[in-house]
Image (tube, rainbow, N blue to C red; front, side):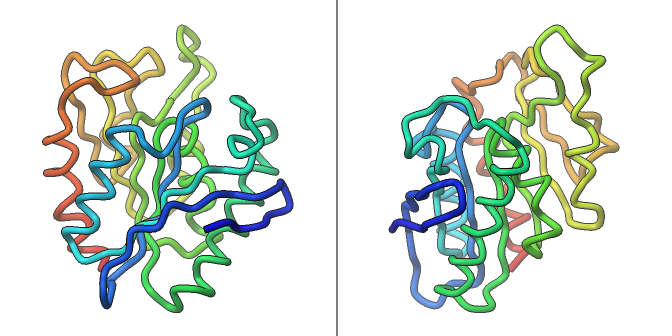
Length: 197
């Protein structure tokens, strides 16, 4: 499925269930894609919980770029994507998420799109080696909307504080890209999907 946005077209990989209880809208990291294993685990967990899933390839990636560019333009395009998905899926509860840069987008836009919850995979708390350049404000942007963070314990982008999200799950010895711990991701998300229905 293709959605036109002010930043160009986005590509949507849809996995639908009959009579979905919610819609998970999830996206990739800056240079990655929607086939990342942690995103696929989130998709599978959502499907098992009775949700349909839209994995979003953002316009800059569709255009072949690795860097997302302006955060404002990225967020504007994301809000347009979710609005188009709402037209298709009606008033289903929306849960949104992403990995790394995608987690930042999901947090920054959660209030604007009326998300029920946010999944932040490998939330990049700060650039590597620059803890003074914290992105904590982005993590707090959803306000009363519950955010679940799953980060690797050895992530050079930092690990959010437990007080800054509804749940912060740390997978020991994992860096920014997960190599193991996918069972932990699934087990963490299952009860949240049940709550967000």
